[in-house]
Image (cartoon, rainbow, N blue to C red):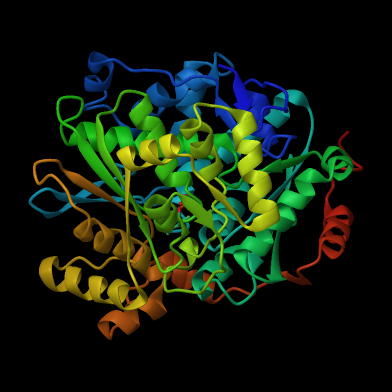
Length: 469
Ligand SMILES: *Cc1c(COP(=O)(O)O)cnc(C)c1O
């Protein structure tokens, strides 16, 4: 399998190069040259398989023979060994055709672990094979950072620098980033928003001299392999609920558009997906784009679901490429308009295609808290605020009652105790791992929203520059 950039100017790469590259050199995002298609029998055969086996089946065509089946299966088995549920991503029924897909049984209690544990092992393997080191940089609105640091801590071949918006992540999220003691992981609080952090990371990648000197690699969902590992649970849940013979809809609490794009990929690979519902909090740029055909940024506000407080939704570029029938020049024009005017428009055909596959609904802050209470009262199930945004959205959209709706439960409620207490009047039970982190000393760095300060800090602390050329 070869990979192409959404902006058409970067080299075409194979799987391992895409894995180690992250953002393409032309500023675009990599996508597979075509979508591998599973037939009905192949999808049906996923029923009754373990999560790891289905993951191997789904990921294999994308690896293009660069990793053997045995190695891939072993790597996946190790990646998911520490998960607290044997199914890895179990379904929980909350209504006649309503299901939650629990994605938070990994070490940092959010769905990011599912992909990050795989990505860290694949990167480590690739770097060792090449006898070199890398500097991994990433921006987090909260959950990616903890998942990344947890997956990469102590790995020899990688130094990791994670940027998060100071004061805008929960205490649990911050401690997951600041309590690991390994010298190869660095948590950096930036005085700014998540979008500022993301722009700083993009600036590092666009600084080609620094990028080459430090062997920069990315683990944000701009990295294709993150999306790839997330395609798997659309198949496992879809097949459990009757695919390929029955269509399934999914509702996805969305921010950077990575998770729901994985659902779009699954659909292109043959999974019968009826609808993909984009659930947003009050940072509703994706919903406004779906409604109006115009993507227009006006600033981010902090909410109870901070991992979705995003305005420049970087994976949306992957969908734009698809909506434009893979016309990279068209994507370049839209991205230039976004840079210069903070907005761009979809053409009517693009807008129609977007609306044909996706729906969107928004939950306000009050609706999010009310949904946590309502679901608990109705079913006894306590969900986190991101999941609540999804459940609330799924209740708002028009749907066919015969099509099962899978709502992605993206985080454990204990990760957001303040919101849970505000909603229900009681704190959620604290998993042992969270209680333990509370007692550990924190370590980290605080920097202004300034590229020069950041690049100096990273150059000083990254080993890849000097030690392992
Ligand atoms: C990252 C995250 C999201 C948003 O996922 P995207 O891929 O950025 O759209 C939603 N919920 C939680 C808990 C997350 O950590």
